[in-house]
Image: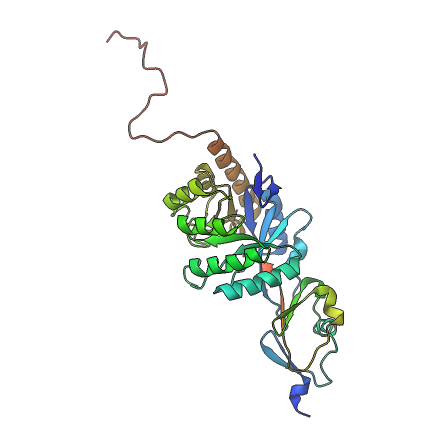
Length: 73
Length: 257
């Protein structure tokens, strides 16, 4: 199997999941230790509503953006 | 103070606060409280996966303050629209400070891209508060397509230079049918007062408060300054003149000539 079956691009960086990619977006966030209540996600340019994180299944090779609010003027 | 109305929503404060550059979330929260503001701006950025830190939003009581996400970092209309949609997904509200600043040195807003983005966002149901240069024609064009305010700059972001664009701001204020929020470059409370005295509906301040040695007290100073300027504006200030005009009566001196 090629490594591509185990990778996701997260915030522009390719990341390998040797044991297989997380099943859902919620599982990915949990694995990364990110509080999902504070995050907005985009998968391949499509915004995922927070209430759908647990139902959003991931596929290898997807590009995921995880953003949140920071101080700004 | 009289109420400020933006997009049919009423506010008692005419001071908007930016949340960037504070040394800590606690300092930010204290300054927000002291400022009396009801609208605070925030930015969207990628989560730092390697260096997970807590979300600054938890320091802002969203039942008291309207979050106004900005599109800072956007260099063109497409990026601004994308950020706007992410912000809406994050906040659940459709208010937006639209800013498109392709030039990193002066951070001046791109008028063409701002107008293009505003057209898309207004059609998509956003309440758009666009950050613009002090251009009266652009302000009119934005108002015509349905933005909730116009937010012309006093001087470049974070420069503390005060009202370098005063003459153009006066024209914008004279012609606007939407609230005019003077944004960027207000470095001192007196700058905020000056903006309010010439008839601005509100001001937005970040750097001058966040980077002060005592942000909380500076926030309070800006609160008072905005109130002083607004009150003075409503009192009908008189024009200046070169010649003196005596305040004391010029008759009845203790001499005969």
